[in-house]
Length: 354
Image 1 (cartoon, rainbow, N blue to C red):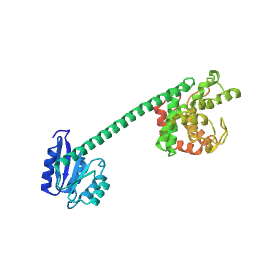
Image 2 (cartoon, one colour):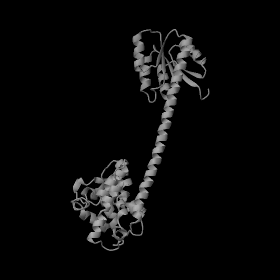
Image 3 (cartoon, rainbow, N blue to C red):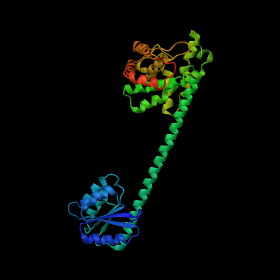
């Protein structure tokens, strides 16, 4: 039979009825009858192969028509396949029960050929419509998925380019945002945060210093120690970054805004810009504080040489509970092997290994 044939499963314990129904189905264009005298066998085949229509006798041994329908409807992807039940019982209660449990239509014996043909054609048309709708829904879902992936990719590119714009004016390298963002995600994972939150902080943390765009070069690029007045200006980059990033409907930009305003706060309340302390500081800011300081210490800057890794780790340990959230420090220290792998993968000449 051709691939466009409608498969019509006929389940009836009577050989005579099977022959009659087979003959009627064969007279309908585009239909392929499939016969089952044993209802359990028919149930298994129909559940696995999903015919276009099932014609089912009500009175059968082993598994009657009602039991068949109940079990068939419980099988995966079998809720839309039409079932035409045929019975000699004219009891309305039986009909109502059958329709309630999932039969699609009913015919009473003796079967009228004209009515039978009309019912079968209508049910096959119904099945075809359901399939087209399902295919359309699946296609639309796939198109939405593709469009979402494109939007997500563009958003990620925008995030990266915005992060690089801030870094471009800074003596830090592009590798810095790669490392610190991955350190941040590593801490989030070590803290047991859900995977979506790990991804969110990975995507948002590169914009932590976005506000440096607004800092004058003579301060941002100064090779020596900043004066108190210059440092006060440098500190404004946290608020500048927040102003640039706030108000977006994007969860990534919302997270980035929270990081920008909070990653220079200190656990004991001595940080800036607001001097908040402890868990009042957003968790994302507490995480990025550890990641950013570690990478800054182990990177060469105009005003300092790069620290060895162990010295930087000691700095984190000593600052736990004062500068840093102890849980974030502990989470970072627990992943030292992965920290070193990130450094190796995103290495530049500023990182000492001895």
